[in-house]
Length: 171
Image (cartoon, rainbow, N blue to C red; front, top):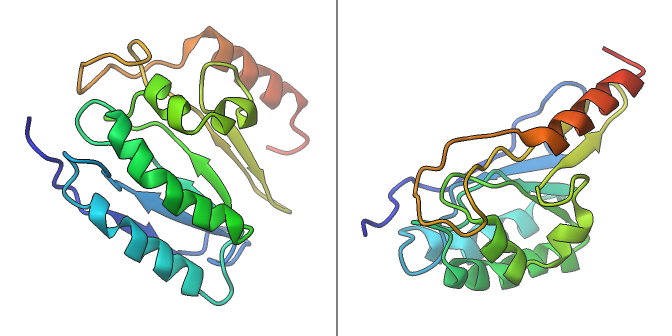
């Protein structure tokens, strides 16, 4: 197994009408024994907590694990995300191609309660003039060993999206 070598990133750019302090994007943490940069997560969280003002939401855009979603990666990452939540920062976790939803939910069981579509990680963020919908396209089985599962939307998410768009009050 090769370690992941994609460097984690933090993005503080402003989007639309809201300032960078509203939402912070976190990419490619790759925690765990196979992750090359997972050891940096405590430093990344320190940087986030030092921001003035702090973001209200941190969105983990996936690949919290490396390889095929090993449990140890999520176990190592959890205390850092607990630090964010303890500081009043909402955390949203999306699935990357190296993540495995079943293993992720074993360590982050609250994620199954927070999602808008059962068996997926689906979230909404609403602002005055802008909404973000985060869908979960991780394909394959819950804990498959395929390192690059094919993306899929699935029937439940398609229904959610159709219903959301039908009820939307803005384009």
